[in-house]
Image (cartoon, rainbow, N blue to C red; front, side):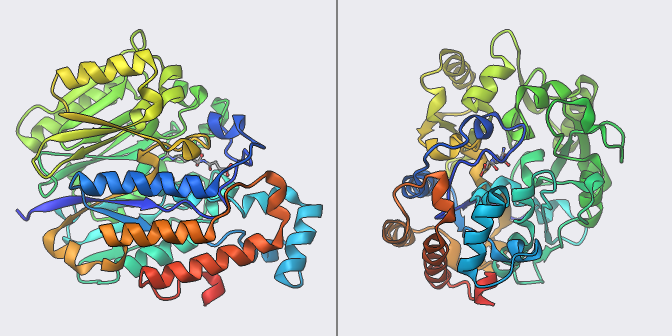
Length: 446
Ligand code: SUG
């Protein structure tokens, strides 16, 4: 068995970070609609979290933001003329569509793709399926560029396969790693890949049963398992409860967190029968009982979970082998969340706790774990990927300077109508691709 590590790739917050309230079923996004945003602060908060991980010895990398506003989308809707004319016209005639193509939502990298490490796949390659993100219009625009970026980062076909996103069909709607868990005795060992899904029957649109959209289909998990060549005994589907969706937990990573043999989940997160099957399957695969912790509603309610994003903490393995919990600062001052953290620490599920301030992202419903894509890589694979995105103290310094130079301090919803924002963003992103040695990845560069 090869030594492997978990690389965390965080999405850099984009220059157009704003609160347009676009995500149905995401309570924070809906609640903060129309608020003034602080793109510079948001990007620096994200970079500081990455630096913390790097300093803790966890391999850390970055994913570049996407080009926003995304003019190819507005052109596809029939807008004609110069870029400037299109933005002015869209702001007047269809501000909702302008908002949709101006969101910086690609920052939530946990939704960028589903990743299967080589220890789980029959051809021993690392497989990626970029998510089609079909449930929310603004997010569906990310799939094409995510595919391009992942292909630039993981270009070596000897080690990596970056698939196309699943066909853009409702029955195959896919939100990536936010609904994917991997349990294993070690990163390099065989893992059990768990595909959480929201609807009931395989290809039936049962989302109408819920108040909010059910964003992950069962069909997506089945297809990803097949295309990633995951061994039969190494995968499992896990149905999420409708209660979660209605309480505003729109992804599995808002009600469960896992790392290696540890899984901490809310009592109402999943179907009970499936949890028993999962526990057995883990035990069989690892040869020892996994460490599962169920947090019961009476001690910590689903409402608390959605309010604090406790389950959206990052549970990571440090170089010492011990685990650390990277929790949103909102948990520090919340008595019930704090009590859970103290209890779990006492039970030695992790050795240390770090609270991070990602408030700007949280106001749009994205906590620490939403901002990162986990990629388990062995030594050879890590060396074979594009090195320019791996965070070093030097790159951290360059990126903070780059943000200071290009990002606006604040953005009000009306500012999306300003064509200068497009010019500023393109200039920033163009410089970023040079900084990260990425070549041309944006439409405006092609
Ligand atoms: O898809 N918010 C994101 C938050 C994603 C959180 N990710 C995970 N749980 N892994 C979403 O709901 C709000 C965007 C806006 O209005 O611009 C938004 O898209």
